Length: 316
Ligand SMILES: NC(=O)c1ccc[n+]([C@@H]2O[C@H](COP(=O)([O-])OP(=O)(O)OC[C@H]3O[C@@H](n4cnc5c(N)ncnc54)[C@H](O)[C@@H]3O)[C@@H](O)[C@H]2O)c1
Image (cartoon, rainbow, N blue to C red; front, side, top):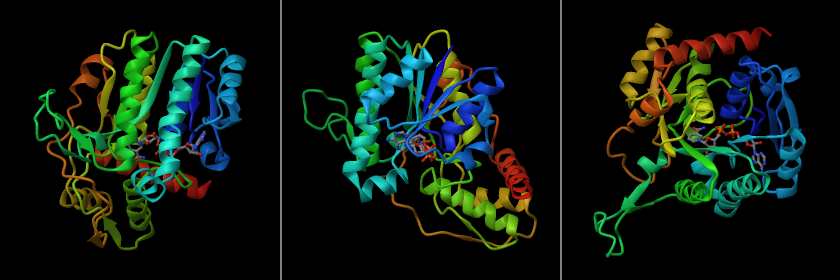
């Protein structure tokens, strides 16, 4: 099943690794491939790495035709996600929305069967309004995204639903804040906080704990959920929450870190940019029931895996 992965960063690299471990040879497209960081996750000799911009439809067409692609995973992202989109809304809107439209339309034109895109659990948090409580005869029936990034993710899900109605098999994966191994710039604010916290603890320095409760997902689980959606016999649903299945408070994060690094010094960080209060943790039952997704990296396992990767790459 020839797969095109667009975006070879924190999550895309892990998707490539899983497919390679399954014996596939994915085509991996990135505008600026970080070869060194990618090689720490996946054997570059076992993928076809192409430099290409998702905002250039003909580049996409070429990759699809040349690779005989039958499914696409789209993970390309504007740097620093929510924070980046607040700083440069036009670029984030262009990449997140038009990039995804390019992928979906290229799939339509070239007969690509399935498109799986990365969405975000910000749609369960960075929302406000909805005071007309679902009453469609009124103006504020539903909450609206309260950040540019969340607005682009909601648009992408809605556009994808409409491509699904005209024959593209479409799924959007709503990852929680992604933590995980990655040796270059990438991910969002929480990704960087997790990485900095772990690297400080590894170095024996004071570790700064994210100050908000977050529904993390380890990058390997985010990638596995995505591959499950890519390979599921049918897609009985089109949006899936992919998280650790629970919110981790700053206090729980501290306890877990101290279990991995007894005696580590910690302090809480300033809160991140936030567009609204999260009402309840995201439910992962759809992903469990339809895709067979279960988080394999709860917090402690994720931390230990990160430490093993960090020490191995430092030695390498
Ligand atoms: N990291 C998180 O915490 C998080 C949380 C929820 C959802 N997501 C979503 O998951 C997806 C993957 O995020 P990530 O953390 O792996 O991001 P990342 O920044 O690590 O990787 C994104 C990759 O996309 C590439 N890219 C950027 N513009 C491109 C373009 N025009 N054409 C081709 N490639 C381009 C970048 O070079 C980069 O390698 C994104 O859609 C993101 O919104 C991430």
